[in-house]
Length: 326
Image (tube, rainbow, N blue to C red; front, side):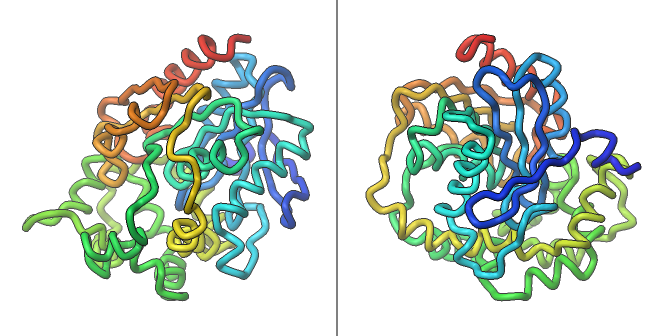
């Protein structure tokens, strides 16, 4: 049996927002559910440690494979992956489950989505938990132009705007791609930080230069890695990359959105050694959110819920018990 079968609840499916969404559900169907939203290149499987801990604590927990990923539909149009669709999918999932409001917890790209939920669908959100990804004010200009100016054209998010090429590059050797990304912080920091200055996050060149026989810093067991590799071999990476291809569209369409979050309990968990979403990026959050609690996970890199599951689980369960007691 695969790790997806042994470490996850049985998969369920729902017709939501014009797609079929696969999701995993555990715990008693009572209280305010917690919806766990993954990032790139990930799956609901990334939350396996949290699903078990939350369910064991008597919490209702739901983790979808989001649009473009895993067992969920992968529409062709790039614009089908904008924030309106991504947040709409989560509202559709609540509707399918007969839920009025949920606590949304997101990591990496999932974090961007859950911080937008109370701006776009405020009546469906009971609370927000950000893991690594902070709530940030709207950029003063097109974020792709900003990233290109700061990091250059090879920065991975800028490169992702190129049609087809990044998708084919990652898919050419899925195992190498995922083993490169899914590493512990020291290995990832060494990859992202060139010897001669600031990191450029030029992941194409870094992956090309990386020797996959180097087993140092690997995060996942062979069975866990296979769960990701076998899935992305089947799906490819286009669905996930299309989220990035909507950065400009999302920025344009967010004109006039609220700039603060008030009257909503929020938890922010940063990771000390994340080279992409550093704790420094969250420093301005107390001025933007009225009800905010912040913690940092020491020694963790980017894949915090998989690197330091016990600490993440402890912080989330402690906050839930105080703010949403069972």
